[in-house]
Length: 428
Picture 1: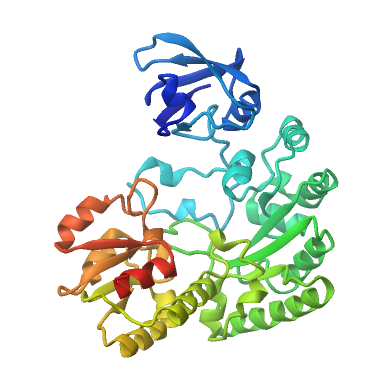
Picture 2 (picture 1 turned 30 degrees about the horizontal axis):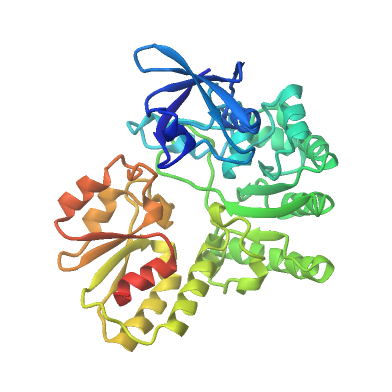
């Protein structure tokens, strides 16, 4: 079990104690550590004794006196020290199995780790957990968790996930809920499998667990061009998407009358495919599954419009091009056109076709550096959506940001939110 330290926060207890990046944390107060959760529990005392190992294997101990809630300032390469729990399922819709070969190893890891679910909102299936894992969740109250349900029909779930143990999802959810653990759920919806009547059953079952089950997200299956020898799946048709939007809208209306929240939310792609308007901002109830792509477009529009209400002028003289996915372009391009008309600017959103993953993948977050470079016009500086890069500033095709900038041959800025983008475009 190892906890490799990647960096130390400035002016922190760890910095004052002389702990260095590259060292490995072996134990705290004499106990081995499985993850940062163990460290957090053991470091809650007024004094913590850390056992460290240098990169050349020299061991030493450091004792730090602290307030009970004071952060040590240690940042680790991974939140788990004993290895990420990997998925034991063989889902027919698994995106990782469709990844393009030859990329960095991390893109092929099928994590299914309840600790990452609690810490970062990663979705887990609950199929690879021993009783000891459940007991740890319950005794330390790891809440909320994010669970990939897909369907509550036991036979269908086992079939779609190709795992006989997958059918007990309702019992496992109930075990968590009975202990006061709140859960956010998702369904990766595949036409002809877990839509229609199967989705209606899943909705009824999960809704019966409300408010323990806080939310239910329905996202469309993602299909790349790399599906050789995989189960034959297809994308939703426009008619199917429209039917699904109408079905879910009815459930949302019923839920809002009953409890004041929508409870169930659709991925943006369904509205775009069906050519239907997205729900208003308040129907997203604060965007509890924004990281899952639920309400990204509505959140962007609302934030952009708030900026527009408070910004009366623009100082920026640059003219930018902003590469986005083809799906987002349909919704947000009118916003920029009104901006240009108002401020007499010439910015443009650029709808980038995804050659890397294939034409059925059209979201901004899955654009690659190579595809963006091929699509860029030659006369404007670039604002990249931050979501196209990971924390190491790598695109999905492993192109580093600095290589992109060099090949681009012009200034490249980054924008994480609509407010960031609006600020760059106005020069404020």
